Length: 73
Image 1 (tube, helix red, strand yellow):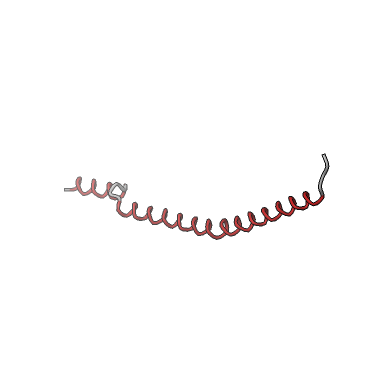
Image 2 (cartoon, one colour):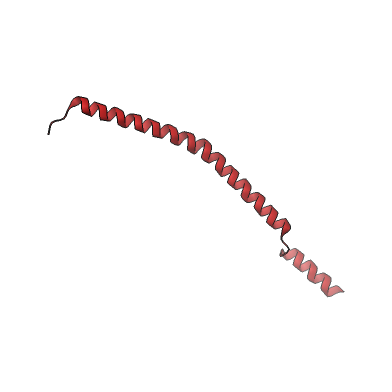
């Protein structure tokens, strides 16, 4: 099996170009798109927690207050 110098150089250049393209896209998407997606997801979870917390009638404090009112009457 003989090695062709031009073929090896061509494959090395193709590999380097593919590596650079992959690194560029991964840097852009991971550092910017994924960063903002994670921030958005965390904000949605926080908002859902507050909406659930303030609209929930099964909170222990409210249950204790209602049972206190029922027992005092």
